[in-house]
Length: 230
Image (cartoon, rainbow, N blue to C red):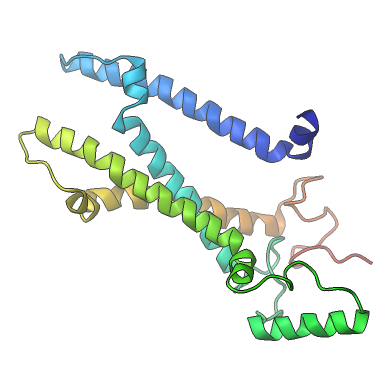
């Protein structure tokens, strides 16, 4: 167990921080909700009821949307376009190799070296295609799950507010097609796109010693991609 945590400490710590943030958000959200209810002379709720309620989960799904769509876009864009000077970018002039051409080049290298086929060459379509794009597809799937959760949970919260104001409830489609739903979504997407874009831009001229996400201290701002080993 300790060996696993040591070998995967970056993801373990970040996921732990996410869980801690969710708990902190739930506690502060619960206190704020009851405070607002008391100010408007409305009944308060228990912590369990709040944690299981639509208000709490709607906010979470909105936040997850913005992060997952920005990461999916980052993974996809870095396979097609470049950011000169960024650590996580292809080098200028290094063209995107079509699938068939890449496959032919790999076969030629294997033929010259005499090495046995690797595991991707033993895969059959469509499994090979799915594996080759699995990183992007994973984030895309998480984004789809998040936006679906936002819709399914958010419609209950939206209808509760509408009923309190004497307005009729709407269907799931009516909620998803409303400006309110897309306002909630896009205001979270912008934060995800901005933070991911700034990571690529800042890595051009800023450094963090000993971090693989950063270029080496002696690398120039113009150098793009991984440092070439001599």
